Length: 292
Image (cartoon, rainbow, N blue to C red):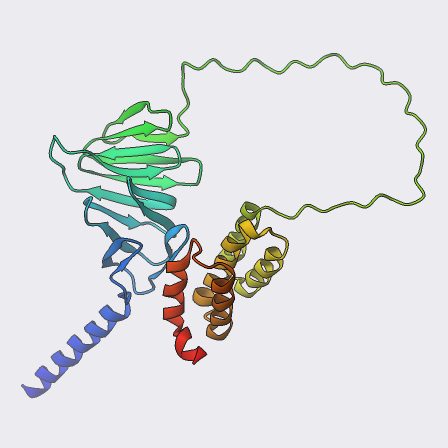
């Protein structure tokens, strides 16, 4: 009988280890509670875009609004004053039923807002376009211009919403070709004029960064950010500096380089936009202990 009790105790211990191994240390992130962890490989981080689920699956809960979302692959979600915004990715939402005299819960997307009184639906946001499929209950899609489109169970609505009453643009008409005058003789300058190469914009840098991250080429991404920062004006350099610090902290996990970078970042961008996130990253790395 004693060996049966011992085996049971071992089984319970193993189950607890597996559970806590798959549970993140923080039970909330970005104002959303981690209500349930569905896979042991869950990797969640927070950056300037919001809560980023890089791999694994979890259920995130906005307690005050009664909104629960379950990711279906990698996604980015952010809690905002007016609702929960799905920045990028695919997720199933379920919303607690609300009293008839209450305001609807709101899920924000690139094409407008999904207004919900209590229901279950799936949203696929691709950045500028996407779809919502209603499984049960009722929702209304409010376009950016204010027009409300009701959605019934089983229906899928896509955005941008095409207005069927808007007249189509007339086909392009081109003038008939004309004979061009003979080209004037070219004068070759003694010294070729200097050409300036335009530095990529922040959005272009971030798009390239996402490509490198998707390939797991993190060291190359860090070198790319360092080079790009030198070509950016001070007004836009802070964002790239924060991205570089996040890369060193969470992907490369290089505490020495990350702590040194965060120190330079705080010195250069005092009271910056990402001050709270920088402090959390420094705490994760125990930078103060390393500096002492």
